[in-house]
Image (cartoon, rainbow over all chains, first blue to last red; front, top):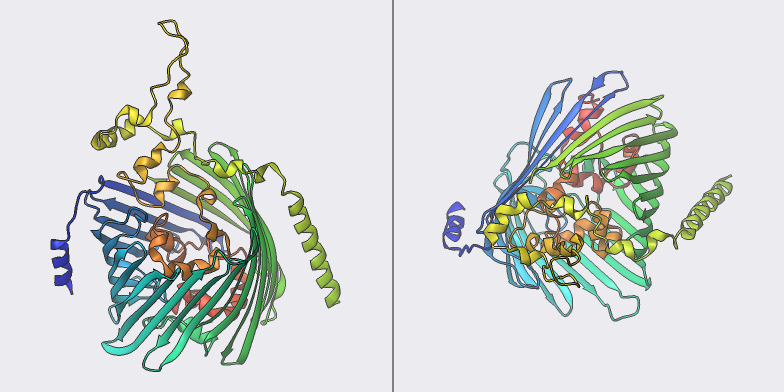
Length: 407
Length: 207
């Protein structure tokens, strides 16, 4: 596998296209709280994001995290992303971001309906700004997995092209699990907007087929209309299954709750007259079968977002009902810059929870604090959190964030 | 009883929405603020000549490439009126000449080092149910996202653990996650793919 890539590296014409640049950002977050047994906890999370580009456009991106429960002295190290990007061809004048390149290392794999961690190689190739291909090969791991595991592997790619005013995409992936053929999946997508028609309809279709079984396992259809200026109606139907490429116990939670594909009908209406104000309401109806029988669920939510000259305000209210119970909640959040480098943040939420295990009651949650910009690239956020619910008469938490963009 | 409570909800929702509509002609909704760059600090504090000296020399950027020295006083001679300093300031968008070109650093740090309110930089489609739709749109055209985001942008919500202040889930989610899991199990396994994630709390490993 490695030799062909080294050959490509050797022959690819790397021209000096930019100056070397390094960008580093770190974030430390920590806090203090006591659990229901009055035990103290001080979790700490440290994230480090390094990006380096050479004058020839070779880019190294590393994103790591260290997590520690200080009281228990339990350390965990996470390698979220570590890639070497080798440019094969620069982007186009009208679309400079459409570059042909090779990505080697740990990265996210998101094709079709899946999202996994990939330890391997992905490549994007463009022949025009409106057409190209992607290829992927490597071992898949579940998100949040810390160990390398090469038991589950995929090989395949997709082709995408704009024609007849639409974006078309099709792909094929071969999945190997424990060195055994575990499936052949083919995918297709279609996206088209008719700007010149009344209501400016947009249609998005997507499907994934298990080739040996010749069954359309996952599918999605979305229709978007603009009935009035600034009003957008988006409706959709989806039939989803858990990740077909998930290694080991990756679908454990899904299999615990559902035995069939999950089907969803969804509609949302957005009113966005400007970037400064949006109102959105949405409703979802979901159904699937579980070990207990047929389950249906409803979810409705309305939200408002308002950005004034200085203040950001958000508010939302929602209702959800499932086999597990019902929840009605509402809340708001606000960001208000007090002076140039100090911003006041607050949010609160109230929920009425009625669960199948006979736990019911009000739950209150509030959080407020300050963002203090010590220098232009050094931000400190200190928050205090208070909650009241069936577990805590009054529960409090202290949260601290220190974020720094070095350069 | 049921109908009374429904009407009560509708009444309060109507009251709330009409209140928000009454606010719409407020100062904030004019077109003005949308065009403002919303910088962390004024440009004179954001840009440091000393820090940029090396890169400007490497790129062969001259003073006149950014500053317009062609502004002259109306009066001639040594006692003429001094040209206001603000006239010599580089225009706002001059930073982008390099930062979107040969001195490009990693997104989104590129934007965040100067701009504080990314709301004003978002494309229009990000305002339509974007939290729920962004995944399928990015799967359709992944390189379009790279204009403003890089891999850690995805990691921040999909991979990073931050149990103190989870950015994805709502407040009180810990208390009603079972209701949502029974509603939409597919959504859980997008990120929580490990068996141990449930067991850690439900079998007492983590409080």
